[in-house]
Length: 180
Picture (cartoon, rainbow, N blue to C red):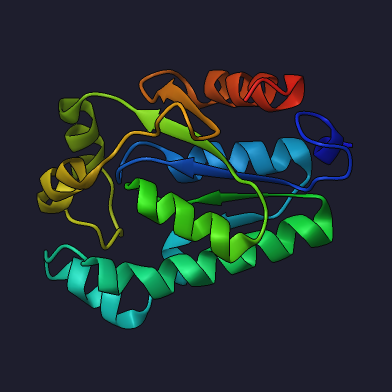
């Protein structure tokens, strides 16, 4: 059972794939969810219409914009993990306070897979994608907001430049061996 691998006996597994926009959170999150036969929650779908409109207009979100979004996503992640034994979410979770808010809303311990790579690569990816509301012009504000996870957080730092399948295996090994 997934929840037993890498966690306390009977503890649901809840993993948040985090990082700035364009690092591959949704791709990796989907792969992990498939591996664990778990629900995948796309954090972008939990934003309010007002948040989406603000980002589409090129304006960065404030903490006041983010709190309700983080509460909705965290609650859904906790519910899915408790119901199914495991769940995976994609969420920028840029600051420690955001990760703590997610965990509080989830009501269970979270693990964070932090996708990190250089600005130039992220900008290239953002410029190449279509149909996403997050414009490349917001990359610098996201990087300025980013607080990489500290040693006191259950987090694994990953090089987002590596192939998604390799990253998936790395997260699986980290979670399934219980080394958090």
